[in-house]
Image (tube, rainbow, N blue to C red):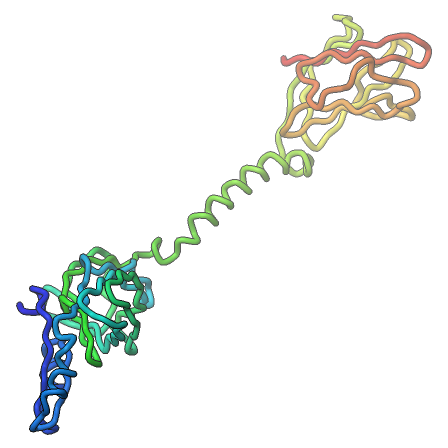
Length: 298
């Protein structure tokens, strides 16, 4: 109770055979020793900073505890009443649970200094020997000190969280997001890059020179091609390329495509869009004539 109320505890041992050190450790205080018959000057030297104090501002906080038990304890301290810089060594930090169990959190002493009338924030690396199940907890931490300076209160309540699977593997979330983005991109690119392996087909109606007699519906698989070939009646759509096809018609997941093969004999009046469905393409023949090819949905 004395520790919780923030009293400064300093044990003055008179004589070398005293238990000042043991009592100070038990009470999370500090100690000093003077001879069995101390002089006034020796007593004054050991007590001149007695009214100086280093205080803990607020409750300590623990960062989320990882799967290996590692964490960091953040504390803020304020010094007042001292005329010189003080060195403080935390020798032990004990975590007391509501169920009565306790464990040490500090693997090695933690030392720092604080100047007169200074406020200081710091992080202390700590580690759980026995890791609780994932969840949120409340306990008390008790500080023990080595040396002649300590801070008060020497015990305080602390809340902390033990990470679960996602908390310990936070990298999974950005990796999963990147994976989903890549899958989406592959879904768009694969049909374009590997049209023959992507499967599927596109149904369309092709009209050459607006002639209803030559209007025909086609169903073009991604792995197949059709060709525009010049015949006696002008351009016709055929499954075989023949000797000199004018253009090629192909399909994939991004649409229907028209590619000029005979670039000397046929030139588009306007740039051909990547997806010609629906659309109308005007080709200029080398003899000055025009051919109009329309692509529409069935």
